[in-house]
Image (cartoon, rainbow over all chains, first blue to last red; front, side):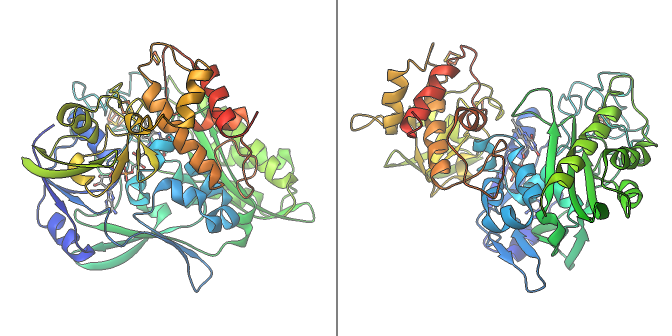
Length: 329
Length: 168
Ligand SMILES: Cc1cc2nc3c(=O)[nH]c(=O)nc-3n(C[C@H](O)[C@H](O)[C@H](O)COP(=O)(O)OP(=O)(O)OC[C@H]3O[C@@H](n4cnc5c(N)ncnc54)[C@H](O)[C@@H]3O)c2cc1C
Ligand code: SF4
Ligand code: FES
Ligand code: FES
C-alpha cells in the first residue's frame, strides 16, 4: 500500500473541494472495497477524505411519496429499515444477499454503488486488464470467464458489475443525488453505471470529486410485491452468477406492469425493458414469463466459459415472476 | 504518514502513533498486543478478525485505524472479562471449536447475531422480510456465514448460539 494522507471531512462542501482539487484523492466510505484495492495495489490514493461522519445518514420518507436514503447509511441498517422492508422488499432482500453481516455493518450505500468489478484479472495486478490499465488488454476474453458478461460487453472488457443493491435500485427507478464542484445533480440509476465500450476504466458517469449524497426511491406501490433472487456457486456469502430483481402488478390474471433488472449479466445492472414490454397485458403465466425472458436475452453473446448464464437467467426470471404472480397483492 | 490515533478497546483508551495505512486489526495486534482478533485472509473474506464496534459486529482487516477513532471496540478478550460472556460459556459447553484460530471472531460474530435477532433484523433466508425472523438453525447458519473455518466446528457453533438465543 502506498502512503497517504487522511482527512475527516467536516461538511460536504469541503469534502468535495478536497477531492476535486487533487487528482489522486478519494472519498472513504466503509472502506470494504477501497482499502482492499489499496492492499492489492489496484488503487493508490494520496489523500483519503473520510465521509462517514458527514450528515448523510437516515432513511426518510419524501413528500412526493418516495424515500430518501442517505449515502452514508450502512447496508445493514438499510436492509433492516421498516420503511424499506414494507415498501421495497426487493431492496432489503438484495442487500441481505450481499457480503456478510460484518461487512454490511460497514458498507455504505454510496460505496456499494461504486464498488468495482470482481473480475479476477482486474484484481490481480500481474495480469493485463483494460479496466485497471487502459490499453493493456483483457485477460478474461480468451481466459477464465465463468463470471463474465453476456450482454452489452465490448472487445475491451467483459466484466460484470458486482453490486446486488444496485440491481434492485435499477428495477425501482432510483435516482442518485450527487454534489460536485459545479453544484448538485440527480442521475437516474439506470444511467449511472456505464457499459464498457472504449473506456472500460470508467464504471460510472460520475466525475472526479462528485460526492454521492443520497439515493432517492420514487413512490412505487407495486414494489410491495417484489423479490430478489440470487443464483451463486455456494448458498451464501458469494457474488452472483446471475440475479433478478422484479416487481409485478397483476390484475385479473393479467400483467399490468412489471419492473425487472438482472445482475451478473453485464457491466451494469441490466434493466430488462424488453421483457417488461413483452409482459404488459399478457396473462401472468410461466409461458408468458419465458417469452419475456427470451425477448430480453435474444442479444446475449456468451463467452466460452459462461454460456450457462443465458438459460440460468431465463429460469431465474421465470421462477421469480411465477412466485410473485402467486402472491396475494 | 504517521498519525496520532486514539483507540478505545475493551473499555480502555489507547494513544498510539502509527502509519495511516494501519488497519484496526493490525493496531489491535501489533500496537496494543490484543491478539484475540485473528488475521486470516486480511481481505474481508473469512471473519477471523471480527470484533464489536459500538456493539455491532464488523471485520477489522479493511477498516483503517485512523478512521476508527471514537468507536468503542469490544474484542473476544473483552467479552471474557468478569467470568465471560454467555456465548463463550455456550461455546465451551457445545465444544464449538477445534484448533481455535477462528473462535474469537466466531464468538464476536455470534454476539452480534444475537443482538441483530433481538432487534428483529431479517436475513437472506427470512421467508418474509416484513416479518420478525425466527431463531432457527437455518437463520443461524446464514447469519454466521461470514465466518469461515477450515476445522469446521460449525455444528457446535450453531448449537451454542441457538442455546443462548433460547432456541432449545
Ligand atoms: C468478502 C466480500 C464479499 C462481498 N460480497 C458482496 C456481494 O455478494 N454483493 C455485493 O453487492 N457486494 C459484496 N461485497 C462488496 C461490498 O458490498 C462493498 O465493498 C461495499 O458495499 C462498499 O461500500 P463501502 O462503504 O465500504 O465503500 P468504500 O470501500 O469506502 O468505497 C468504495 C468506492 O466508493 C467511493 N465512495 C464511497 N462513498 C462515496 C460517496 N458518498 N460519494 C462518492 N464516492 C464514494 C470510494 O472512493 C471508493 O471508490 C463484498 C465485499 C467483500 C469484502
Ligand atoms: S473483463 Fe474487464 S476487468 Fe476483467 S480483465 Fe478484461 S478488461 Fe479487465
Ligand atoms: S482477516 Fe478480516 S475477514 Fe479475514
Ligand atoms: S478453528 Fe481451526 S481453522 Fe477454524
